[in-house]
Image (cartoon, rainbow, N blue to C red):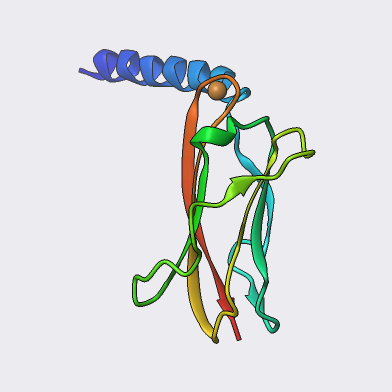
Length: 123
Ligand SMILES: [Cu+2]
């Protein structure tokens, strides 16, 4: 039984290693504005996420939701030209104080999909 557990563990480690290798070409956020989890005193005019790899503009979305579950930005955001396709952004209307969630979903130039979400707060 113990031996089997060890074999299973090894399998998991190998899989994990393989996915790490592939992950090097996926696109993940490097930084964002507002920052992840930030509380800002001035409502932002736009939400921006910089990625560590080039994006496929047609397949990338960035949307912002308020605590009532309403999307606050029009459209789905866009990849800004002239950024080596690494900056995904959206304009937002004047946001009243409250908590917001940013949802992003991208396809990198290698065809791999990543997505995530994070909160920020306007005071
Ligand atoms: Cu990839």
